[in-house]
Length: 193
Length: 298
Ligand SMILES: [Fe+2]
Ligand SMILES: [Fe+2]
Image 1 (cartoon, protein in one colour):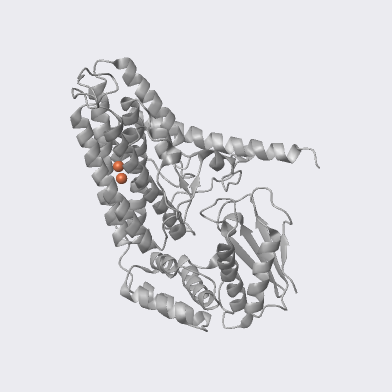
Image 2 (cartoon, rainbow over the protein chains, first blue to last red):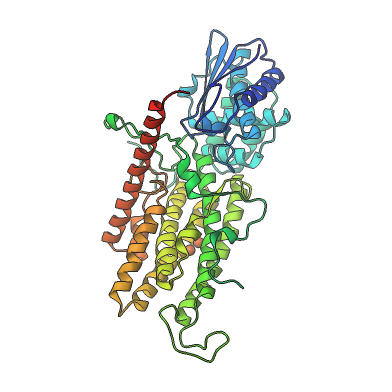
């Protein structure tokens, strides 16, 4: 069934609901989620690049702030590539949760920053193989920020990026292998009580 | 070569996309708490630290801002070398050597030439850091307000605009980025920002020293320059993107500003105009949204 996008028309940004819907429909088809109800609500008053997702009775509800679909070169205009990357990430996460192997993953809002980065790496690697243009170095930098700038961290990144199928436990084990090799916290970080 | 180049004539290739301050202010989106009736609601913290969920993308965006800022600082300092006649030297095409207020000492030009050398190096470092962080040249819109606001036709205002306001902002931005790199454990980012920060402190010092020397016997001109700097400082706060408030992604680097020769009162004045800019932005957006809500339908 087709994806539903709201609002129909935008006033704060020059986005097209039909473009968002077309990109989402293509991704939903590629990920085998055609039988699911998928809704996308865009908060056009926020320039943040945030996306949230909830699964209720098997339906996928995505909320996106407008920055998630915005062309960074042309503020308030939409970028198809950036839209595909943002929607692809969140739909892959939904698909992981629905397809099994991720049953014990905590709700999104309870994930640690390292777990979020590890899961994103796993999603973006698969998106690249689906043909979405991504900048691998950007996501490596994102992963390094959460797992340390170490060789072990980069090995973990490669494992997540190139894997076609992981469970939550496997994903966490790879993330933890990088964290175990992380350098001690920076000197200016506040001491833990 | 043309003197006093207008901002629209800056040389950029097709990778770059420009955004004007007017376009920026026309954007009525914000994630700030702009609800005046909800003052007790916790403010949203936007200071760029690794704790932010979008930390790496925030750092990439700021790094690109630094990169284009370095290009404009290079253009600004280069223009100060070229736009003004050298005091005591025969004017181009004449034998006259009498000086005017618009002439500058040779030693000032030499300092600006040294600054150009630094800024060119900073541009190269910024390109390499952007590569490292996964950002392409031109991936973010370039706001050329730094050059536009800093390039006055009066050399004293030029020093106030380029070397005090723009370079002062560079100190704030580099300090925020350096602390980010340190906390995130990024060895290159912290190291590079630290070295560039040291140069920026020198650039502000050169501006402060020359401003003082050139206006030594002209307090009125000095006051005019410092007033101009206040206006530019407010503009460079980008609606409160830089201030002491944790709602601002970039903080005010009090210690490094002090090393650069800003007095405590001067730094406090910059903080005041920055907070003012933040409050005005919130009020402007709240006002525009309220007007849109009450506009007649159809
Ligand atoms: Fe610089
Ligand atoms: Fe500088």
